Length: 81
Image (cartoon, rainbow, N blue to C red; front, side):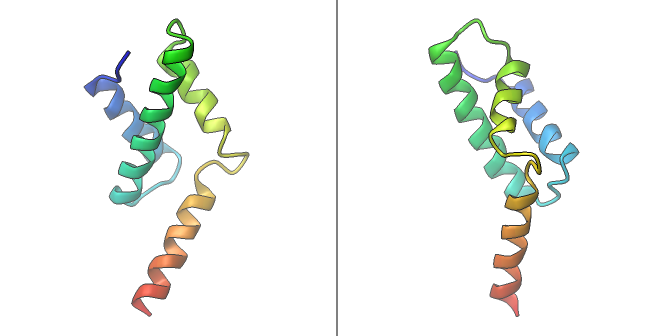
């Protein structure tokens, strides 16, 4: 099964709700989540989108996307300073 356009929009909204402000990082995370959800559906096609998203988000740990955002900020500040 493939992720549809409305689900991709939901992934972007999900990343914004979890304090990812940068569009390029939102795109990378949405792509990562979409690929992971599609992989889950290969193994278990009856799993809902929301369940699969929840499982994938839990893999980021208790701080969610914060570590990814901090790493991106550190990389960009090294680049531009």
